[in-house]
View 1 (tube, rainbow, N blue to C red):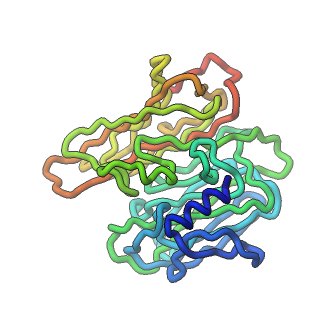
View 2: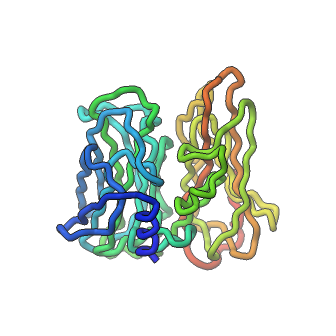
Length: 333
């Protein structure tokens, strides 16, 4: 399945190759070899990827909108990721505004996605929200020994000229021998989130998101799940001017997630406060039988003539099957 995807990427004209750690040739994937480096450190508590330095602004390359070469690496032993965080700063260590970072995506090229047929698993990532993710205790995402993991980094192409910009992505890992229940990762959004379906995007949608009209916009998209699961953690993603993103079960008339970001007076995104990020070891169920809908609400100031694009996404971390505690079947925010 993964080879088929990579063949598709080549046919789309995404050229280039990367050598996997250890010196052997890896699958052909798009690269931008003139920009920056990626350094990886691994210890018993975390795996840290440091990107750069690069000079902003940068362009984006390919359907995954990368500003830097993709980095393929392997872990020396089976590992469970139990959380993550992202940062953006200068080479001297000075923190930079969050919106300098477009996204950091982490993919497992050796494990198929459950939400995007034919694609590798997108198992972690963050954009300008940079909210720290900490899964409920005892749950994690398995990253197998020797699996080809890949990082994709993009800086916001409208960022002001800035020298020596760096980003960092830290994955927290479970202690060796700790009992961990494995979770699947499922991505959902109002905008198209499966990059193999980017060709189906409407004229108002780009890799920056869906164009937001002046005033209040309420946009939604239907959703069907490919597996039955119990959601334990939901990592939200949004852009400036977002007022709310939600996941609703239309069959049972339940709002499962309702996430409101902290924004400035003009709508500039600050972050998702910790209490707005769903984290619950009881979880709530999703099924292949029910009909769902993703919703996002934006406000674009009437006096702002600039074209703006928005997103409303979740990365859902879930255990397969139903929830053990049926009393907590919804998580209204």
